[in-house]
Image (cartoon, one colour):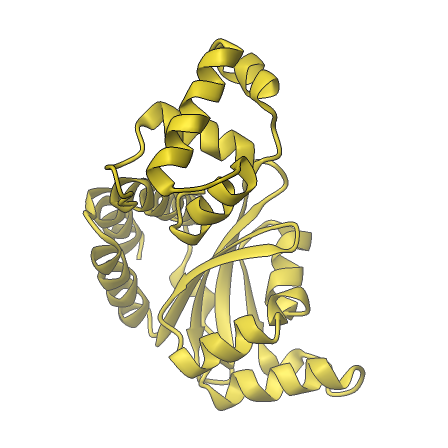
Length: 234
């Protein structure tokens, strides 16, 4: 499967839109005997996801904030290495919410899988999961852990690049410098702090933020960050 992983990395880096990334991931998952995939990034209490799970399950998962109790997410953050899992191993007793999560996951065809976690910046965690409705997943199909990590990183950055390139504002796209300043603002950095991190003059940083606010029709920096997040820019 090393060749398939190499192909997945190449296809992710060459993808021009999310549809192409999803096609590459679906093809790889199916070639390995899995039915679904899910890329997920967590940062504090926030989550971003890109997956092929049933839409009904996506609505339930996000609406119920199941990512806060999901055993796969918890294990990924704890271990930070590739691992296989099965819902049948999750405790049958304990919090009713966890039992409900397990039962609903199995009901929607997510019973076992392999997850590849990668530590991101600012305390974030990225993870790529291949899931099956079968009782037990075969981890042996993903032998090369280093290539698996490369695949997660390639998908992560390609999704960010595509999101930044497709954010359409009333007066055009954000420039690379505007997008960078918005990204640091989303991390809670002030204009002077962003200036120190980027080597740009503080007044110039503020100019980029003001320009981005006008393009996205935001009244404040906080609203600018919120709009940028809604569009997948940060």
